[in-house]
Image (cartoon, rainbow, N blue to C red; front, side, top):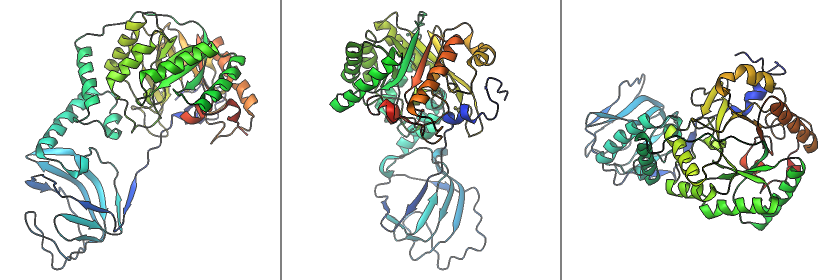
Length: 460
C-alpha cells in the first residue's frame, strides 16, 4: 500500500494501531463440578453423520454403544480427536451445530441423562448458533435454519451473525428491525435534503448521567475545553438509555455550558454487543432529541465501520426520524481506514464507509495523528470519497494510545498542544470541523467527560 500521506514513512502502525481488533480462541476447562443435565433435550435425530474419523491405535475394551435405550458404562476414552461433526435433522444440515475441533479426554458416561466431564479441556475454534438451556425441538431447529438464511441475505456485516448471540427468531427487537427494513424496501423513508455544516471544534464524549459527582467532573472538563477553543460536545446514547436520560444531559450542557451538542448512537467496542436495540425506544430518543441538537454523527465506536458496516435501511430509518423532527439537522457520514468486515487481521487495512445520499459531511476516521499530512491525504488518497463534500476529521493525538499502552513521554498539556496542531492541519487542509478525543482512543471510560478529568490523560 502506498503510504505517501504519512509525514514519516517509518511505519504505518501508528495510523492503523487503533484499528486492530484481536479476537482470540476461547479455552474452557471443565472440572468434576461442571455437569450438564441434558434432561428434556427433545430432539429426534435419525442420523449422526461423521464424515471422517481417524482413530489409529485406539483400544476400547468391553465397549457397547447405541443411540436408543442403550447405556454406556465403564468406558474410558482418551485423546480422541473428532473433526467436522454436523447434525443432520430430517435431511437438513444445521450449520449452527458444527464443531470444527473437539479434543476430549477422560470421559465417563454414566447414563443417557447425565454427562460428567472430568479434567477435560475443550478447544472450540468456532461455534455458530446458540440454544437456550440445551433444549431444542425439531420445529425450533427448522425455524432457526430458515431465519438464519434470512439474516444472511439481510445483514451487510456478517460479523453480526458470528458474534451477536441475540440474533435469533425469538429476539423481538430484531423482528421489529426486520419490519423496519421491509418498510425501507417498500420505499417508505425516501431521501433527505442536504444540509451543510457550520464550522465547529468538538470534544468527545459524554454519556447520560444524573450522578452529582459525575456532573461535577463534566463541569470541570467542559470549562477547561471551552477555554481550549472547543464549542461543541458529542453526547452518546446506548441501548440502555431512555429518552429522558438523553434529553436531560443535552439540556444540561446547552443551558449551563452554552455549547453545541451533537448526538450519536453507540456502545463499547465489542462485536458481541448487539446494535439491534429496541427500535421503539431508539426512535423515541431520536424524536425527543432531534429538535435540541446541532448535528448527528451516524457512526462512533460500536457503530463505526471498524465494527459495523451499517445496513442502508438502518441509516435511512435513522435519517428519516431525525429529519422528521428537525428538517435542518446536519447528519454526518463516515469514511474509516483500518480493519473492517472486508479487511480483518493485524496486517489487513482498507477503506470502508457508512455513508448515504445527501449527507452533510464525511467524517474521516483513523487518520488523526501527528505523522499524517492531511493535505496530501485529502487531495490524493481520499479524493474519490470526498467528491466535493464537506469534510470532518476525527483527531486522536500524537499517536494511538499515547497515554496508555504506547506512552509518548509527554505531559497532558504537551499532548493537548499536539492535538491542536493536528486539528489546525486538518482545518487548513479544508475540513469544516474536527471531532477530538479527550483521551488516546483507549476506552469509553477514559474518554467519558463524566468519568475522567482532562488532566488524568498523561503520556508520561
